[in-house]
Length: 222
Image 1: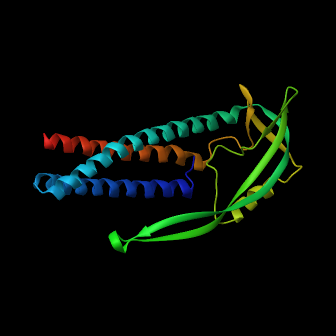
Image 2 (image 1 turned 90 degrees about the vertical axis):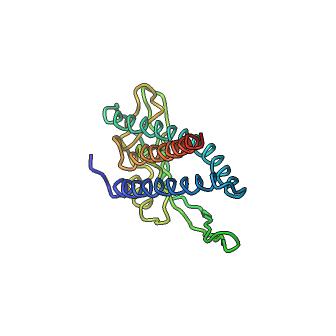
Image 3 (image 1 turned 180 degrees about the horizontal axis):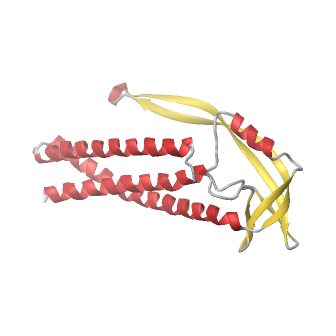
């Protein structure tokens, strides 16, 4: 399967981010280790605060990453299996672009010079719903593929998806034979689906790196 630009970009950014994060932690732990052994109250307090942070953040990132990783892998497996699912004739009953305003906050600087800025952006996504029947039982589905839900500030993508599935159009629905209520219009593994387990792997790796440096700092203290 070919990697689309989104997945390729995630590999590059994620890899560079991990390298930078590991370098940051390594330098930070060296500084805190020296401060902890300097005998100063401030240095000891900073080392203790950093240790408490790693004790909380390490397990949290690890468990969160493992959860996202497992969920992502299961989603990829399900997408792969969907190519061999049986099909049923369905009909589009909803096809429209939805939007809402989302607010994000960012901060710059440190200490008294730290400034927070707030920005508001309108995001768009395609809301699709279709009906189909299997052996006389009626169902409704909303899943188009097994990729990540796409919400973007550029409306062109959602508009294109809605245009592909106009209301009233007949569609071919692929449904899970063990659970007919689960269905999809575009079977297979979407490129964006690969990003989900990758995100989980990065989060888990960050947590493990935190735990590693915490363990090493405790070993050096002993």
